[in-house]
Length: 198
Ligand SMILES: [Zn+2]
Image (cartoon, rainbow, N blue to C red; front, side):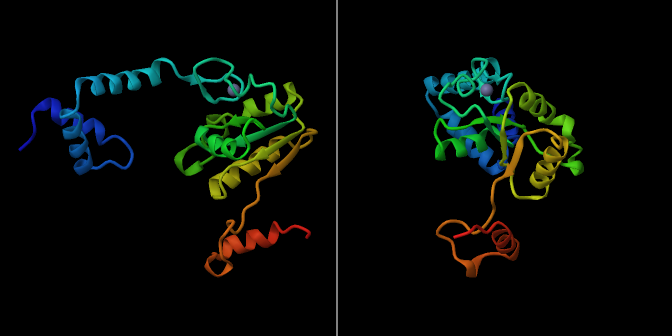
């Protein structure tokens, strides 16, 4: 027993979203079915707008409406340093802690041989060119502390060997407000390795 086709189609399309199973998709579909016409048109417009109006900044690969993006056009920001991140959402997190301070380079992924993603599939070569062109003094590699993030960080440091740029990696350790007793051994090791003078 199926719902009428338009409802079934909506359910199937919602199920393509990450983390949405048939049950949730059905609930969402009925929510939409019972929503005002105005909300439905606003939602459809938002969906078409992300495809029509959003593109990647040609400098940093941030998502933007205008090129270069707001961040690349912001003169207040440090011109010597680039923060290298995996995704635009990661950039937003750093930006929330250091408003208007850094400029970024967004890789849009990490090297992941198991998924067939190599260096040419993310914006690493563009990073190298950019460092030369903009005479960058330091890059802060802020990829995640997992196998793919570390592999990517290592690859970046390899291809930049011999260049003058200082390459730093964000530190990994016990979270602020955390407790040593609840910390896994990998994190403890990382905390010891990344220790600082008092
Ligand atoms: Zn940009």
